[in-house]
Image (cartoon, rainbow, N blue to C red; front, side, top):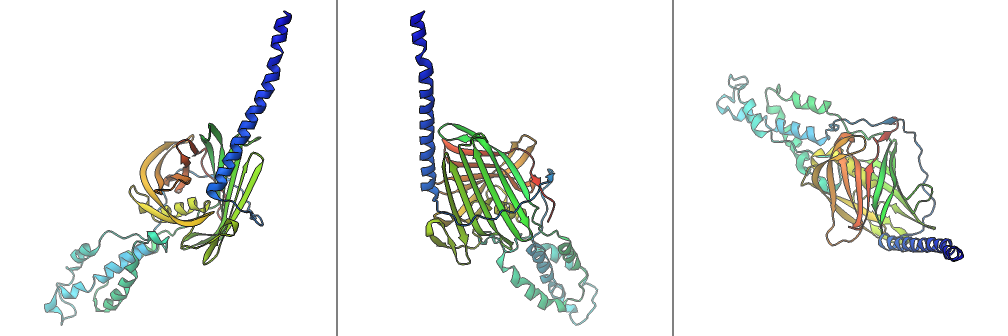
Length: 390
């Protein structure tokens, strides 16, 4: 009995030692992971923190068919082509040219209009440059207006003009919050939560993304990124970007400033700016704007190019629309379009995105991946929450 008691005593002594060893190894892994993120993404000291706009979310966004937004150039293209067809009417009856009211004149317009009315070319109001589809459209109305006085009967032309006046214009959605569940792998399975907030007050916007890995009371990793800027003809125009990452007991902050001719990067670096440049936080909302105003771009086989400012450089990213997929969320089954970055030869972290047209083209899944063993998968937990329109 005494020998049994003596053998039982060392067990409680070894357990605390083993627990301490596990904590030391875990802390070392997190420390190395933090250094890896610093090496890949780059960190610099941030000056004054961004003043965050506070809003109240009071309603859930209902699933609905995607909004039909007619860009301004589309009805202009149709009208210009219809007007340009008018000179063909007197040319089709040269023998009756001296007479202002010949009998055969009512018959030619219908076949002529049918022949020259090709499928409409959809363009956006000055979108990101790689997506501009029909730059020469501005030259057509001038010629058509010069030829218009020779047409004796303009009765067939008002219909496209009425359609253009009734076409709905794009409206920025109100402030919206998306809540995600987080699952992934980093030297083992990880879980957590993430939120994305789109905040709009007039023509000013903010985008805040926060991801917490681990339990809320003792997170292993917390990452926050924010973008502040203005809304314009090219979508989002960032003015300032801020990032913060906490791993264990270490905290890093970095920032970028967007100027008219350059982007001020962390650590005193700078790079020439590019038209339509975005940051890590504004990228998701910019893609939503593109797909809302140009839904034809959200089709399998299409490619979207977006200049992206990273902590060490500014470069163009290409996103391919690779598949149409139905995702089973916790609250509904959502048809989505899978968009994937194409960056051959790069080993940096990439983000694949699934957009849901029935939820205002918002991202309902985001897969952030470094390699097959290191990734974070965000799935929308509940319907998006929105504030009252501003």
